[in-house]
Image 1 (tube, helix red, strand yellow):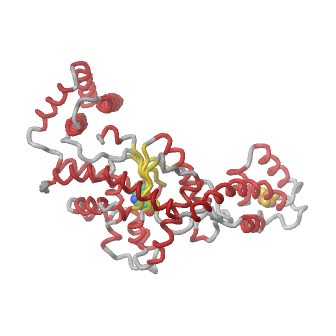
Image 2 (cartoon, helix red, strand yellow):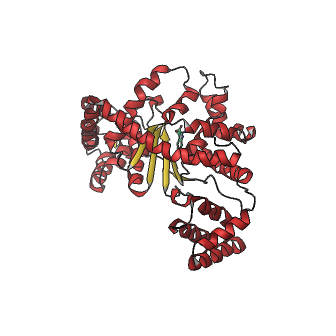
Image 3 (cartoon, protein in one colour):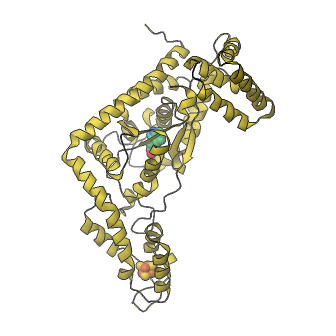
Length: 404
Ligand code: TRP
Ligand code: SF4
């Protein structure tokens, strides 16, 4: 797969830390479902990442990996559109991680904000380990091995994608210089044919002399369209555009996932650690019970006390689930004490139940037949490995490790 084409590739991973909930659905999964139609997607269970913080919890992995993938499938992540796999089944990630570790300055890892943050937060765990320090590097390897152009992440992970970009640049800088690079690049230009060659050279000049980024994108698109140049030449020309050497690893961009508006039952962010979640496979009776008993604006002690939706976590659920008419009804009814809180919760309960019922029906099919899930993952791993092996072969040869 050429670098140019892989710019249309999206990669994302999720740690197997337990049953997924509505926060994951609205924050991450709906985004994946949208992306899978627009890009070539690779989605994986980041079990090695979970090991960096949960290395003592063997039970975590045996169950959670399959259960999480069942949740993905049940909400509509489609193995026909996206390769779904488990990180530890694609050992190429580990080899790239090792090779990158040789050129990764320690300071780059120590400066990643999550390093100190997490160490301070997870005080009951000893995170003074090599694996934990190297976790953003492992993430970089996850991304670079597929030459992914885009990585959907939350704000907390943007620094990791930035590190990935720096590592790709450093790698290309150290290993991207082949003897006679410029001559090879000029020869490759000619192979594109007269018209494309002239256009490429003009766009390259416009970018290098005037910093014209549009010209750069156009030239990259032009390379993507070329049918009759080799992968090696395409990468040479890609690197030549920006003036550096041959581009072996592609710099990815973050696709910032908007912070989920999905609140937990207490109005804080929905998260397992706050114990305020509704899981995707929560029994419907419990969904009803949980929402019925969730706290409301404390000012509404009696039905006749007016309230303010902006001080009520239920309102945030209406913002996700209700149409304008219902929201007007809530605003008015709450402020004028015209509706009771239980009445107000009813449309939210109905909407959540309507959302979860089909998901749970789908999940049941997979629960009954976990072999289907396993074969989806086996197939996804094969797709992933094929692409990972290609990158690794080039990386090995660039580094000077010979192929026997
Ligand atoms: N680090 C991410 C998390 O903890 C998961 C992850 C691992 C990931 N590798 C990735 C996300 C690559 C995006 C791309 O949530
Ligand atoms: Fe909250 Fe609705 Fe009760 Fe107002 S009426 S306090 S918005 S639950």
